[in-house]
Image (cartoon, rainbow, N blue to C red; front, side, top):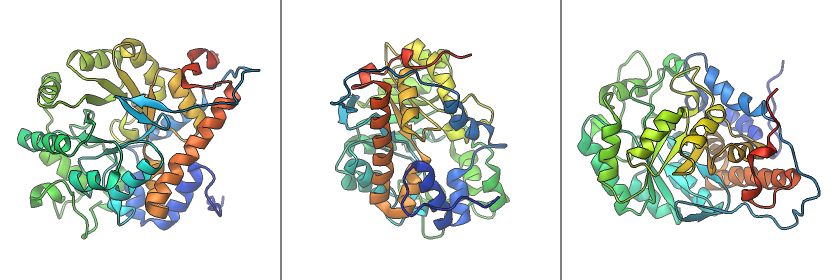
Length: 366
């Protein structure tokens, strides 16, 4: 079978991926696109959306529609945010600066990764729009405290604490490639050699070795309470897949949770996020913000996530494909392509507003 050919102009998010695969170096594309072990969860994140069917309403006036919403007090044009993603300099020289500009142009917000190639301060200066900061927890708590303080000082609007990565998932494509950052790239939020670059000479993924050496494997709910206590910013907990964990997160002071399996990159065969979402939303949706990521590729996916209890979704890999193809404009194009699909799906489903996207739009399971 011949591989898929790129469209002259991408018309959907899958087209962006086909073109990006041809443009990016193999090591970079594999890093961005791969999942853990057999990549079962990676594939299931998208496949599970396809098992959910819609029951559209007819004869509804959809001549005037709005997909605008507000997240933690921040108005945005659509319930689609940019997820945190590391090492964007492998996709484009402007790295996270371009992603921030593209997200701002599309009317939404970006979440900056701890492992960004550009610094908290550089991205804040480039964004001209709302930003969140995603935090990994290092064994040395002062490293994490410093990141929190810098994000707060630079005007970020929320912290996203990722809790599913005490160690790195076994991403076998990276192992085979012995993944390392290109020599001209470093982690922009750090200045010491130990923190800004991977260990050298490892017979494995350099990122795996970095995480094993520096991340805190003893993280507990008490540590979440500590993070909440040291910042004025709302703290969201990313990596939740169970109702009991969602309840503990909110009870520990979190302003919300992000239902996520890290894009299928951590524990393989972990539950697809759209399947985990209803349980979490039922547990804490009346008390806190509930978001989700993983597998969103179509406007109908956004409808399904909202109908199952998410306030909004976070988009990951497709943003990188747009970044690779055309920098900030590519990011904007990806986000606007999905936004356009979502608006059309709303109209065809009989929803003029986000409030009309309710659970009864979903067909019962067989």
